[in-house]
Length: 94
Image (cartoon, rainbow, N blue to C red; front, top):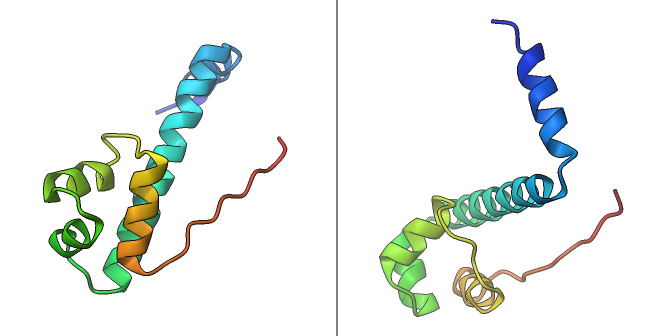
């Protein structure tokens, strides 16, 4: 399958500011979810334990780890506290 038309279509869409912002938000949400899930698994914790420690519903933890929702800053802080890790943010120029 030739992916060149797909790449051209994505490149064309990325010129649209609204599309680019939605794409970037989704990628960031996926990265946050994967990082939180990997850290939880590395620590041998269950979703239920993170939920209990973070004062969240287990279903909320599952949704966030599935990247179905964007976490709020307070949610991220509580989640990191439950994992015993520090939340750091790095901004990079494009």
